[in-house]
Image (cartoon, rainbow, N blue to C red):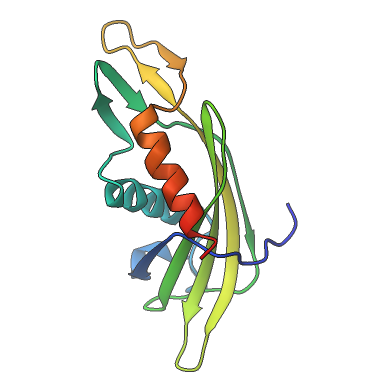
Length: 154
């Protein structure tokens, strides 16, 4: 994946890097960027009044990842303050593609340190037999996702 240039975003999530998230060089371990994307996604869904695993009507809905990638441009370290910005790239019938931009906050400016992309599928979870079946995004949630996506263009 080539470097993603920041686009207008619809959700921001901030955090301070913890010591346990760093490697021997004191740099955030690459695997944590995937956790940060997931944390941001969960906070985004909560901001819409939903969860990533919830019951909507008679259906238990979940959002497993079907694709994830991340490009790294600059290191971030223990106690750096980072801002993760989520952009909805595409809402399909049964999936959602989001872009993530990671910024390190500095006194003078925010510096882009990484970008990522995650594709999630809308699925029905059958609690009786454990089966996972792809479903269309529930209409109530689709409307909220579209409204969030449209707010990116303000």
